[in-house]
Structures are given as structure tokens and as C-alpha cells.
Length: 402
Image (cartoon, rainbow, N blue to C red; front, top):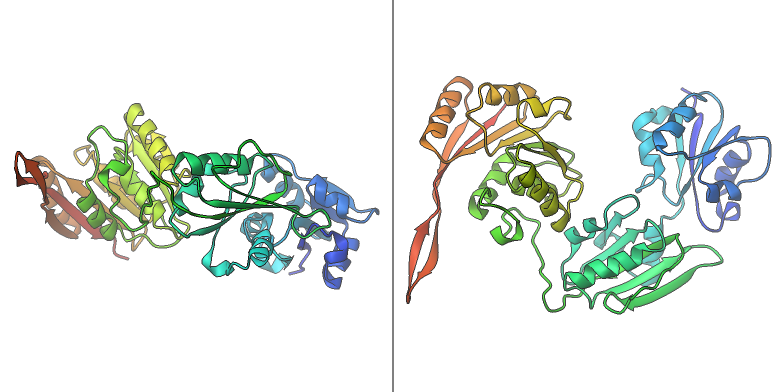
């Protein structure tokens, strides 16, 4: 198969910064694709020029229509690291593509600061909520973030300050790697209304101030980390539930009867490029799920308002399913089991005798394990401490056989 599609990383130094092979591909392309800034760096000539449109899928369809011609896509730095190269790689076979990267903005910023890149959190805030930064806030953590525009550093500084991380050091690199490179450094608390060039990369060195709260990414966040109306899987049970769900990189979870969204949120916080869908029939609770997801650094959680199983239609296939409510809905457990691939996990928690009976019946037909989780917490009672038992939870955990 001919490698007709080239994705060329290009820096602020333009064509002179390209390796000879990359420059030849750009100069001999029949079709050049890129943003206005990148296309302005390309040599004038007879090549057809396509500027990225919104939605981006429109331009990708136009690229596909030119299959067989010499197409060169110009992208920033390393196109496969939060770049358009990753999008193209999902559409076109690798045998059709040649990818020629330049140093990424992450690499350049880390080099300027002397930060070991492998020890940094490298994220993108381009077309993504700034709340995604919350996931990485721990003392001493170093974060590199691609900006949406010149106002992103201000938004980052405001977020950090509002969460008690105002002493954190912000270093903003503008137009990295080019003749107009500039650096602005300040603490988050002192950033104020300062605006920088639209093309910038933010480096954050996290420093906790009064009121800062660092949250572990291991399962079992404190209950008060979530907004809820009582529909919350308690901390100890939640940790056991996540262990049973066993998230793996790249997997998708359905959280059915999500309540506060605590299970799907902690699934996403575990990392590994996972995805999750929280299904909740009560609109007020669904709104709380969305607020919790943003507050806990996973604003990408998809929230579906509706009752299962009807609300499940059209959702991406899950690798794991958690049922926190609704086990009594006729046919729900069977529909969820059918949706799973071989090796998929189904975990259901109940607190009522009737719910327990349903899980016993389901297990007799399909297998799996049943566990009763009983937790008591020491709480003050006058001058003394008493053990206060939480409602016992019966948990079904099953893995779908091949």
C-alpha cells in the first residue's frame, strides 16, 4: 500500500527547522493541509491547500477523498502527542501514513526548565475543560499543559488559587522554539489578569497553600469529596467495588443507577485512558454527577439522563458494568450481561433482602461470586465512641466466559 498521507510536525522555526526528508515531502506535496498558521509557513506553489474546518471530521473526509495523491498534513511538534496525527491514525491505516515528528511543546518546555519529562503530567487543555487539571494536583507535582489560547493561563491561575494551590509556580512559554519565544513566570495567586500569546504552553509546579486538598487516585476517596443526596456508595464499599470492576487501560465502564457518580468517577481517576458512562434517571442527581466529575478532575465523564435499559441504546460497548440501582427492573441484569464481551465484568451492589434474593437467583443461573460487605465506623456518642454500622451490602461479581 502506498504511503500517500504524510503528517509532518513543524515548529515555530518553520521550514528551516525541518529535516531534509520532511522538507522534501512538504515541497513536493500535491495537497497541503493545516491551520492558517502552518499553511503560511509552507512554500508557495501549485499544491491544493485545505484549511482545517469545524468539525474536524469534515476536513478528514476531504483528505480521504484525495487518497492516492501526495497529501501532507502540517501539525505542531509531535503530531501523535495530543495532535491531529492521533486523529488521523484512527481513520487511516498505518500502511498509508508517514509521520515525521518534531520536538513537542512538552519536550521543549521540559528542556527549558530542566524537568525530566517522564516525571511530568503532560495534558492538553485545548478544547478541553480546565477542570481536567484538578486530577493532577498533588504537592510537588509538575504539570505541562497545552493551552487553548492566551486566556488559558489566567483560567489555570484562577482555578489553582480558588482550590488553595495559589503558591504554585506558573511558567508560561509563548511561541516555543521560534524567534519570538517569550517566557512569563509568576505564582498562580499573583497572576492576575495577565494575558499572553495564544500559542503557549503552561508549566505548573504544584505547591499547596492553606485549604489545598490533595486527593489520591487510588480507589476510596473520602465520602465528603462527593456532592450527594444520600445516594452514595460509601468509601469502604466503593474501594471493594472498584477492585471487583478491575479497570484496565482503554476500557469503558457503564455505571447504571449512578447516584452521585462516585464509581464512574473513581474508574476514570484510576487513569489509563479509560472511559465511562454514568446513567442516572433523576435529572437532579445527573446534574450532581456532572458537577462531581468536574470537581474531581474528570470532566470527560459522559452522563446520560434516563432509565435503563432504554437509556443504554447507542452507548459504546462496555468492558465492565456496575449496577448501583435498578436490579429489580425486569430484564436489566440480563441486558447488561448480554452487552458485555467475553471477559467483561458485571458488578452489582444491593442493600435490601429483595435485591439480595435477585442476585442469588442470577448467580445460580450465570455464576459469579457473592460477597457481603459489612462496615462499622467509630463515631462519637457523648463522651464516648460507639461503632455505627453502615447498611450491609451484598455484592455480585461475575466475569463473562468466552
